[in-house]
Length: 361
Image (tube, rainbow, N blue to C red; front, side, top):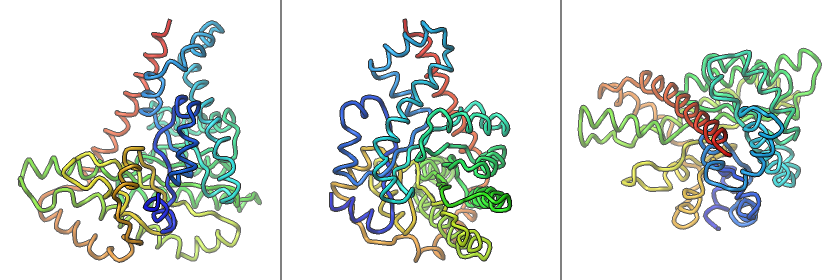
């Protein structure tokens, strides 16, 4: 696993973008922790839908909970929080040894609430209490309505994984929300040293959408497959600017922990591209890369780790976006579409999960 060790040594925490009862009970997840440098797990509605649909291990619990008169929504909450709680316990030694930086497991608020601030806050608090583990992260989408929820949950001492970030502009607002939440705790005399956060910046979907638009206007464009990585590079540049600011330094002096950039959606969709590109080209200190097991295996087998592949490329990334605009690609429209589409995909997966649970008899 030397390639994976090299990724970790270069400053990137490897998290698995998957969780299921099968993984937990078979020892598959424990094996990845032991032999593949995996130090955290992320989940989302699509992952849970696939896990529960594809396994018989949930059937007995579903029937028992139905017999107790639980609603479908209550059953899904019970099943998912059980799995996440067990995963949190599995990662507890890593959580302890890294002083809370890693060993993290994420659970997402209902995607049906993506554009509702107050219910997102309420469910975030509820999920944190149900799982009741210090290494839990509550996932909140970076919609405009999600931003004040991120601030409020942080101010209440709940660690948050902010998901569905596609643009640097929105990422800057996410960092502002995290900082405001921390500042509110400091002003209230509360500790901030145990609050951790990651900001999940989506990668592959950027190239998939832009390639589609380029193919419709300029087939064979050299800009194909060339935007997601520079976009993430500029996100890291924004991260460095914030963490170098006097405002952040004042919080750090009070014990504030970094909100690390997390590279999500790192499986390569277009098979013409190198299958490790969204890992190898996104390496720098204080990052997380959450990847499906297939991508993890690709990196293990043939990833060529070259150390920091971000910090020297900020100027080139800015130049790329100038070229993209000159080619007629409206990037603001791209990310607006991707956010809307991302929320819809998660909501569809959640509805499918509800329907599958309802059909168990």
